[in-house]
Length: 121
Image 1 (cartoon, rainbow, N blue to C red):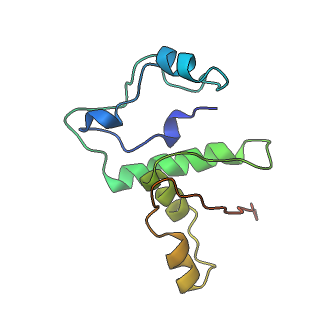
Image 2 (image 1 turned 120 degrees about the horizontal axis):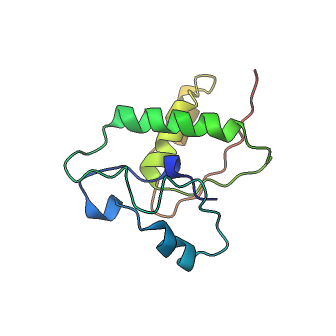
């Protein structure tokens, strides 16, 4: 499932502009694109780079949506800055400082991290 909220940082750089949904559907027919905001990229702005605070707010929205999902195992595939902000949003204050620092480090290219998230509400 492609989720618009979980896309790369927005703005300025043409490489951060997403393709048309129809192009993506042709390339990845097994993925559900129904959650995209439209055929064209309405979120990208050639003049404004998305600030870190807005990325965090968007990842907070994404995590709220994620909690509504019935699946027990979910893979989040995105860009490093997005994955890093998801970890920031989780407020890992219960971890030891060393562990928190290690988990929230900048992601390497193609890096995979496994994280178990439990809703303790």
